[in-house]
Image 1 (cartoon, rainbow, N blue to C red):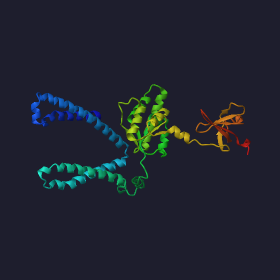
Image 2 (image 1 turned 60 degrees about the vertical axis):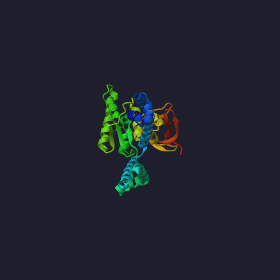
Image 3 (image 1 turned 120 degrees about the vertical axis):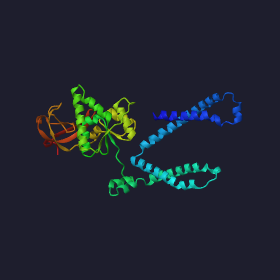
Image 4 (image 1 turned 30 degrees about the horizontal axis):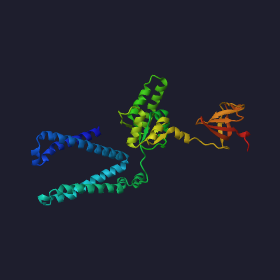
Length: 359
């Protein structure tokens, strides 16, 4: 919408300037023109074309500026805004006496030129000083805060906002990550994710309905336990069809991180340079590593494929095949790891009872 406003405004300005520019022509030229009104419409057309070109240039520059501003950290944006305002205030205070000086009418054009250049110079100086010393202002705001001091020095950067998608809310493990402090920063729940959860909770399918209600219950508990961190973000993108595409767009707009368990969303977001925190990847990386010779307690649940084999499972679902464990089905058995195998279906560990393992 803003693009159309910029281009239409400059077209109107170009057309107006073109229509009125006929008045600036010398009288002897105007005397040779048979149809002055027709000439006005010709210059109006040329002015409109020039307005289109200038509008496209301004629109492109505006979009680049917008993208640059969105990528700036909040503290840098605030410090630059303050530096710009202070620079303009100082420029006006210092230039005010100049306008009171008596200047000949022939040199009156110097006043607006001096005001323009003075404002530009002091604005740039304010921005430069803000980039150099802006962060140290945080010390003045709260000098006793270690985190504020680190932010002021640039040693510590504020954590990006975390955006929860529907899959990780229903999964439920994100609640433990937030409760234990492993997931830091502001937690955003987009309004369109809430709407999707509500649709799932109202589904006619029993399993979907249960999952949707579980997700809403988890959000309620999170909001009760962390009222300052959980924020319902009202942003929506009517021109985007799917919830996944909206999540990626929101993460790009606020420079945030996506928290998900959805494999496809993970890949799509990564391709678009959005940081993704996959709960499944975290769980996979936190699985305990057992090396040959390590001991563990294991409950034998069933027989294996080979004679006298028993099968048990670790808490993360990893299957453990125990040689000579077929006679201990239903019992807790101390076993010693003999080897491990990574298959396409997952990891598999082989072990044998501790009393029969070689020393």
